[in-house]
Length: 483
Image (cartoon, rainbow, N blue to C red; front, top):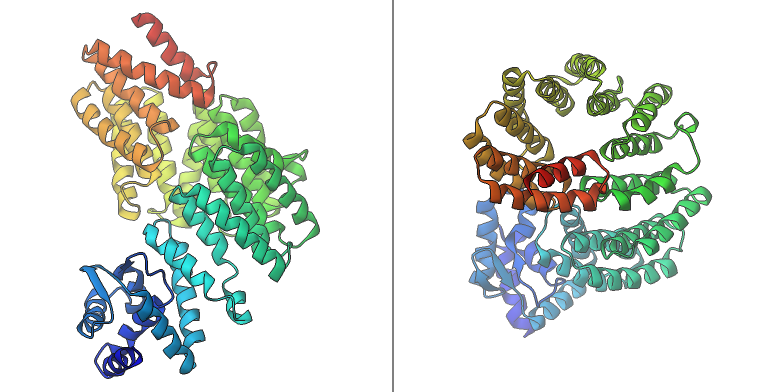
């Protein structure tokens, strides 16, 4: 068996692209043999040059070292993997290969979207690096990344079991107060939260917050909490986000806050309150955040553009259109000056002006501004990005107001599907677009279809906002008139 492995390895090393082909082979020896290995996993080793990647893969096939299942996937027999690992050990190459494999898997685990098999290969790799202190050191962050990736793929039970085992290992190796141990505990809390075990999740987060006061990881853990709370808000899980903001903010006021991350939490919390219909509270918070930001000014946002856009949005929701327009125009001018015309904040200010004109009844002018903003957003963002979808959703409202029902309906269906795929069908924005579809059906005389949609929207709004929220009440009135 040794000869069957060593001879082709030697032959490949002499070929063009041979060294890169061997990199694929060597790293694959530490991945799980039970799952396919996708060629895309190794594309970064070739600077995304598909021709070189394909050429290297063909070498491995030529010498029968891999089993090719499809053009883009392969596997290695367990016996072959074992012999390759022996070869690497004997030639003092194993540690270098494992380092490269750790870097490769970490690179992929940090992406928003990965193949499920990548997670399995990362798990396999971790079991083989624990004999070297140096390799343990550079792979400390992998368990947290794996747990996060599993959560994205809804492998919650598996993520929790693995995470607990990894947590025990980290606590023994680097201690319970090491940054990576605390990060893993935080990620396990997000798994509990995703499983609906909110009390347990919040308890862990509270413990972590207390530890942050004693150990030097407060910035990292605060960032994690802020991001998690924001993620819940983006998913319209407001009731679940509130306890996290209570942890972050505690008994403090905005003017007592000198941490930029906590100020960000205050801003996000204000937007949550606004979404729940508590506009005056939100405005009061944001008006305090703006001067406080100037004391601990973020170099990336010298004018407080993001916060002022948020304030303008809440003023608009409250019905104070004059002050809202002033905020939007001022931030548009400052963002163009500082960020340029194709920056997201610049385009958000443009869009907000269009939305405000829509609310004021200037439908044609609003549509023109919104369509221009959409074109610009698409130059810098993918079509599925929330900023693009939000702009298109407001274009729908403009079209409905201009009685362009057919065009509005087609766009509504496209945007609804995009929101549903991006978040879920019970997301606030998805339900708002669905409400628009119901409104179009009503205008077109499709009464039964409209009422069915409004019932679904009413149930969704009740779950998100509660029965007293103005959006829920609006749908309820339509249903009562139609009964």
